[in-house]
Image 1 (tube, rainbow, N blue to C red):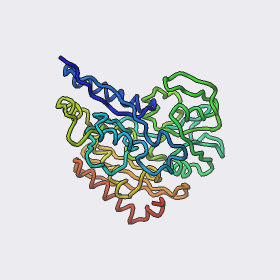
Image 2: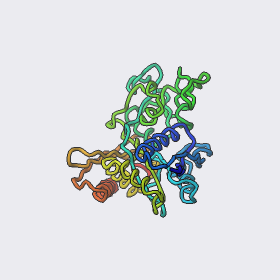
Image 3: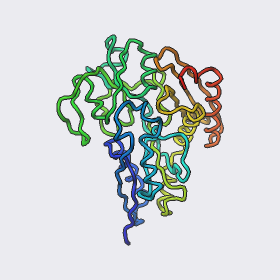
Image 4: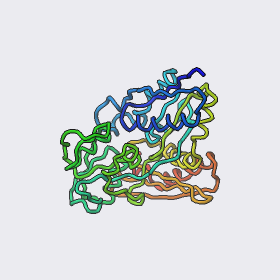
Length: 327
């Protein structure tokens, strides 16, 4: 049997290549014996080469546009994204073929000396590039000093006092900059990279509601399909229905609010028994005020999830969330 190459586009960061590797391994297992061989293709995105705060880099999609263009151009057959990095408007010619089972949705505190969020000293410096995280941190601890940070996971961890810089290969590098008391990162990314030992506290969603789609991957292909029936069938198997419903509700809310990754908006949906529950938060950027609302539906379909997100967003709009969050 002659081998057929199937290319998977990915960003070049350690987290992106690790995530893509998991998807490639899953697809290989699901198509075993088909003669299909999976190969990754590295694609540089605007978010990888531009400096400055993420919130000022042109909005949602700075990590996805080049990957999507590569897919549309036929330079790769499939692309793997962190779902929270994707704009809510799906471009013509591309579809999200699979949303694998979601990993941990929570944000994680990585602090010096094993401290919890409530134990950080008054005026402690906490690093994050996310307005959503910053606003919710300040709502819980108004005394904190929020520091905007960029860089890969290892570089961010290296900003914490007493923490060595983690290399992309998992090794330890030179002494870290160590100018911060803590950083906030997605738990899923830390776990995928094997950096769980740096987590001092998993932040309860009651304190910090995650970004829409956090912990989820999106496997995107051209709308015409992959041109390989076995791969298309494997993608259908890889798609997790509960995850698909949850992220559809969350992203539908975000789309109706016309908010992107720079907005202090959090959302989290989950299926509980026969009900899809969607929680949301809109925050003043300085954390001085927050608005939390919840809605649910028993229509456990993609259309039902989408309608739930729109309905909750419209409630938020009626009650002043857009003004509160500066949308």
